[in-house]
Structure formats: C-alpha cells, structure tokens
Amino acid sequence: MSPPLLKLGAVLSTMAMISNWMSQTLPSLVGLNTTRLSTANTLVRSTNALPLNPKEGWQVYSSAQDPDGRCICTVVAPEQNLCSRDAKSRQLRQLLEKVQNMSQSIEVLNLRTQRDFQYVLKMETQMKGLKAKFRQIEDDRKTLMTKHFQELKEKMDELLPLIPVLEQYKTDAKLITQFKEEIRNLSAVLTGIQEEIGVYDYEELYQRVLGLETRLRDCMKKLTCGKLMKITGPITIKTSGSRFGAWMTDPAASEKNNRVWYMDNYYKNNVVREYKSIADFVSGAQSRTYNLPFKWAGTNHVVYNGSLYFNKYQSNIIIKYNFDSGRVLAQRSLEYAGFHNVYPYTWGGFSDIDLMADEIGLWAVYATNQNAGNIVISQLNQDTLEVTKSWDTGYPKRSAGESFMICGTLYVTNSHLTGAKVYYSYSTKTSTYEYTDIPFHNQYFHISMLDYNSRDRALYAWNNGHQVLFNVTLFHIIKTDDEA
Image (cartoon, rainbow, N blue to C red):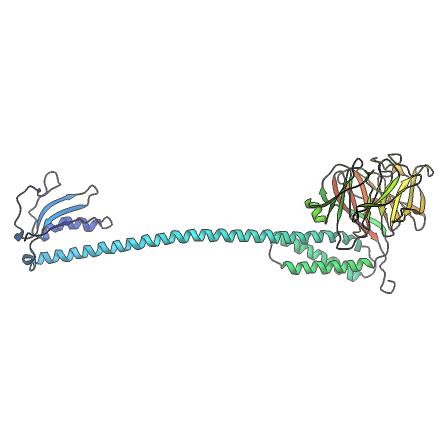
C-alpha cells in the first residue's frame, strides 16, 4: 500500500506570524534542514525529481508562496507504522491539530460575527423605524394640542373686550378686581402654553374659561345702560373684500348663536355670506349664502333678532329680510328721508340711511329737507318698520363721519379719516345734546361702517378692507339683586 500524499494549505491571513514560523521550522522538525530552495525561490524539489523513500521519514515534495506571501507546502508522509515512535512526527501532529483547532475557532468566530452583524443591521433598521414613528406621534400630538389651545385663546380674545367695561364700575370692586385678575392669569397661562405646549391640562383650562365666561355674563346682566367714556383698539379680525362693506353679528341672539354676516361693497350687490362663528369667519369656512330679492344701498345694515334690515338701492325703503324663512317680512318707506347720496356721511357711498340696534331696540338715522339736512333719529317697530318716535338734532348729516347708538344715545364722529373722534352725542331720553372729545385709532385710515353691538359691548367696523373690533368703556351703574 503506497503512502498517502497530504497537501497542507494553511491560509491564515489573521495569523501571519504562525504561517511564517511554520514555513521556517517545519523542515527542521522533520529532519529536512538540508533542503534548499531553488534560485527561482519557488520549488525545493520539482515534481520530476526522483521519488524519495517514504520509509525514511517526512520529505518535502514541493514548497512555494502564493501571491499574498503565504506558504504552500506539499510533503510525503511516512507510513503510519514507521512514524508511530517518531518524536518529531508526534510533535508535528500536535502542531497540526492546534492549527486545525485554531482554524475551526476562527471559522466559528467569523460565522458568529457575521450573524451578529446581520442582527445589528436588522436592529438598526427597526430602531430607525421606531424613531420615525415616535417623531410622527410627537408631531401629531403637538399639532392637536396647538389646535386646542388656539381655540382657547380665541375664546379668551372674545372675553378680552369685556375688560375695559369693568374698569368703570364703582361698586362690587373686590369681585370685579378678582375677575380681571383671573382673566389676566388665564391669558398669561395660555400665552405660556403656546410657547411650551402640554404643560397644563387642556380640559382644566377649558372649564376655567367656561366658568369665567358664565360669571362675567351674570355680572353683565346686572348692568344698566351706560355712557360712552372711551374707545380702545382696534382688534383686526380679518382682511378681506373691497374698501367698503359691512359685517355684523346679531345682538339679540342667544349666547350659543355666534353667526357672522358679511356684505361686501355699498351697492350693486345682493349676496349675503353667513359664517357659524367668528373662527369660521376668520378661516373662511362659509356655511351659507343668501341672495336678497333687492340690491342694498350703503353699508349701514343691521341684523336684529334673526332678520336683516337694509336700505333698498335708489330708494328710502327699508327692507326686513328673515334668514330662517328666506323671505321679506316687511318693507316701508322712511318718510322724507334723503337717499342716493343726498344726505350721506362724509365718505359718500349712498350712506344716507343708517340702520342700527342697541339695548333699547331698532333705530334709523337719516336726514330730511324739513330738518335742513340735519340728523333725524327715529325709533322703529321691528315687526312693521313703523316709526314710533322721532328726534330732530342740529348736527348736519353731511358733516358726520359715522354714527352709532348706545342705550338710546346717538354718538357721531366728525370724520371717516385719520384723526376721527366721537365729537357729538344726542340723548333720546332727555332730548339733549353735548359735544364730546372721545378719540379712537383709525388704523387703516378709512372707515365706511361703524356699529355698536349691545351683546358684545363692542363696535364693529369696516376699516378700508379690514374687519375690526373696537372695545368701548361705558360708565355703568350696577343694579343690586333687590333692584333687579
């Protein structure tokens, strides 16, 4: 039986020192230190050399280096029965076993490393996905909370116009001071929440706002009619439409009914746009459109107790149009009233007849030839539009910028431009007048509509294409429970 031919291919890139050591010491271990490499440094003995006697011991058959410098050897092993007592052979076997064990360990380690690396890659992908989901959840939460707190802030903005009203109260000072402090505290909290959302509980704040609103409304019900002392603002609600127009809410509506009506321009138009709330009006979320049977004249319309009162174009006829039924409920000519720019306000715009409402009821302000073009105030029956009583004033209608009624007193501005102020007032209760000096800020330089809303205690104005609100301060006497 011929001896086996073993090829030892030891490619140990991570153990270069062991490979070099093996290539240098293997010949000496097996008694082959007389072997010399050829001049080509590739073969010790060519394959064409005479075969060695395998019984003489281990013999190098060929030896070379691969392109990477690693040793590749071919040896002839002796027969087993001749090597069994050979000490060098035993050492070589032990060395080979160690090398094989190390190779297997390296291979196992490599497999484990590859497996762990794939696991790490998989975990990295999962962590990135989880991080993205958390970021999306955080963004959604902030968006939702921002919306809720913006609603709260808008609610507070609706309450803020009530603060100046409280400043003139001469009784219940302690209660009023407490109300004002709570309003300011809530406003500060809401401002802080906008900067750092999520610090306070939304439901708790919402209940506090509702409670404060209820208490303020109860307090407002105790107020008697007041005298105008101050106008502050304006607060710009929206910018829309042309330079001239009207917007309003119903002062006789319930607290839950906050509909807004919008009428752009002062003639050649009959389209009224309705919004469910101030917030919808600001966002442009229109709920309904009404096409009136007649075009209107001017911008001095009023919504009162669910109906729109307006001046029919090119006439002195007043129209009552009900929004719920979509029908004209009444119409009547305002006797002797000038129309179509005969006696307008200083800005023109067919503003001859001004319809308005206050705590007492429905009014018409206009001028007649019989009163030499001076202002006439008439109280109207809201159902039939009949004039129940009239007052002739001595203020020229053409010299008035705008006018509005508060508690039966007509307040007249001296201009519709920059520098305008409330210059004249006439009390229908005492049939007396007085000159006043109550300035207000005409922010956008041209006012074409100015009306008082008794429910909101504010002035609605159309200021050169901007819809704005002015806060009013009234001198009030608070009724006690016994007087109520």
